[in-house]
View 1 (cartoon, helix red, strand yellow):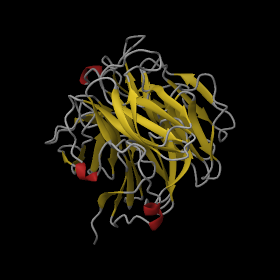
View 2 (cartoon, rainbow, N blue to C red):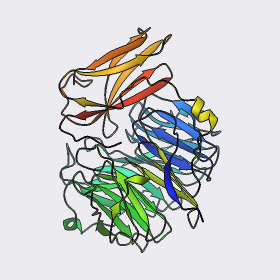
View 3 (cartoon, rainbow, N blue to C red):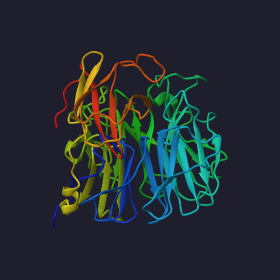
Length: 441
């Protein structure tokens, strides 16, 4: 029998971060990325077609069927898009006043019922929203009573569901240093919530919160815990009544987790940024339900989401530095995928930030009507548009960023993504502090 293994697919979009994937069957799925692209595959990832380009950071995506889907963004001015035919996307313009300013998590229960959660920023108001009529109207509500940040959400049915994130006693938190995880459950469609971790706060370190949630069935579930300098997950075997924190300890000292995906109670993987510097993208695996862990970078790097199909699992997908596929068949790129390759707008995949200004090499295609250069931080927050040029000079260029955000404030050193958009094409490059170690490729 052929061996199941993870392999990269030729995902479309030339992005430095693919945040989510969603498949309605083993062949048909969609991906979203930091370039603001929504792409579709109809052949199990052998080729991808870009369906929509937006000036936003696409964070999450979900579908009810082949035609009806929604995508959430971390850009306040473009928070959600939807499709009614699986091909064409449009902004959702009827969001209520209390809608999350950034949509980090989506749970599409069915054609009529969709839940959304956000945001990961402590300075934003934690909120949720839902529709029960397929998007004709939405309702939204504050979640400050139960959380300070909210990321992922998963609903079992129209009334019962989960949202994970973190909470601090500080009424106006400015960072995540005092946050501890919450795993919130509702049985009445979001009107009331119970934190299944309440009373156990001493078991968790400060600066840790829930990131992604996965249930294999009504009893077995997992939550990844993001922590800049540590690695751990939550596991339940009783439907979420109780959760156990399990440390992820492997030889490479993985940390800063985001994605989590199990195919049964024993075998699973975690991934994310990999270390406090956000630059290694390590993945780890377990074959005994989390008792022991091993290095698993071969499955893919910088993983934010796992999706699996079948019971037992017959195929899986994960989004990270690209879209990865778990299968017993090799991923063979189609001729169309090879033909779709184009010269890179940003030739350098990664640049070291040694001093200001940082110089960013670019290649502007002839005939381009407009270019913009945007900077985003590691959480998908828009730092600012630092260049907006009409009828730009074509050819090789060097673009510069002086280190200031859209409000004129100097940013703190850290990990950033620069996105160059040329008409309807875009490309990204990583901006990494000089002190951060080199990443193997």
